[in-house]
Amino acid sequence: MHLIGQTLRAIARRSLPLSLALMALMALTSPFAVADGINELKDYLRGLNSLSADFRQITISADGGQMIESTGTFYLLRPNRFRWDYETPTDQQILADGSRIYVHDKDLNQVTHSSQKKILDGTPAQLLASEQPVEDYFKLSNLDEGDGRTWVELVPKTEDTEVVKLRIAFTDGQLDNLLMEDRFGQLTRFIFTNLKRNPQLDYAMFRFERPAGSDFLQVD
Image (cartoon, rainbow, N blue to C red; front, side, top):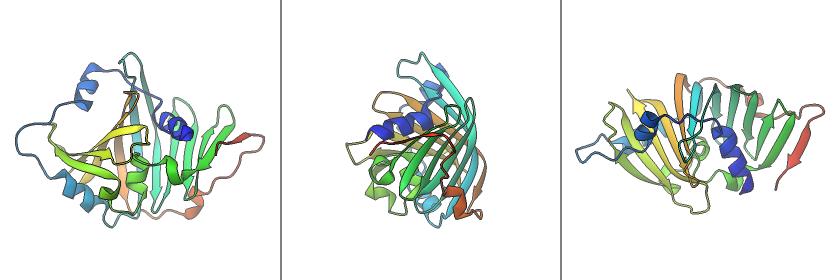
């Protein structure tokens, strides 16, 4: 499970300590009637074959003292293939080819890789990439954050994961925000734009080619 720490921090090691954002991430559930985010999530995943989107990622350290922001493009091809291409602040790629996950730090010309079977438990990647029913892996509950979005909270059923909570927001049936809290108290928010549902994606996009001269580190 060591790589999931690397992977999550590679997917999430860029954060923004804004008190307002922190309050939004941790806002209490409204006591009033809430929209049915559970069914909206299930409807969204039903028939989802592929996905592409630009993303803005904001990560807040547990003490709120560090904030890192990054941007890039996300690609998904179900089942179990995804790719995060980070453009700022560093050039990095995280790629899952269906059996292994590769984290490529292009500035360092270093690649770490491991089997993806176990390290995705409870993560947003598992939620989006797996074709298994979402309730097999997560406990689901509806939320009302009072912002006009439809929210659902997901708590991983497995205890052996660094992710303790996910929150997903939909706007007009489209994936909008994804919030992740890890067991270290770090909070990560993904904001998606230019989202395309079921675009035509080539399997070759999810085939990792080892860069010439790179350090290639297997961690399993």
